[in-house]
Image (cartoon, rainbow, N blue to C red; front, top):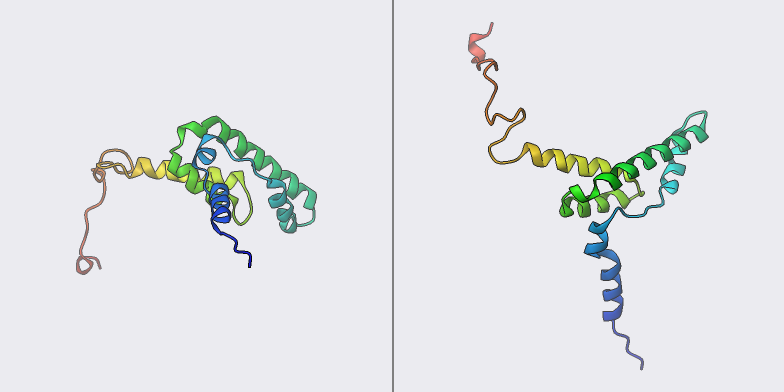
Length: 134
């Protein structure tokens, strides 16, 4: 009886699914045309215009990702690539995800608040009990 080992299969799958350096070294290459063909279904009367607009958005997002890639945190890149490739590959999705992580990291630094002062603005209204409002 022939006995096969699962180790080579698992190793191959692991190598394909989680190459950390490949994920963080550069912007992944995606087939966004597939996603944009799906957008044609929602294009109304001019499906070709929807496809062209989608492809332009994807190319613009790819350009921004290439320009800023090294400035984003490796952990954010890994997380956002995973979100941006499923269910349909999209550079716009990856860029939006990374920008949200980047913005959130600025907002949630210890001692900071939106506006940068670390406390509520001086002009904020005082809390008034419901019973006092008529």
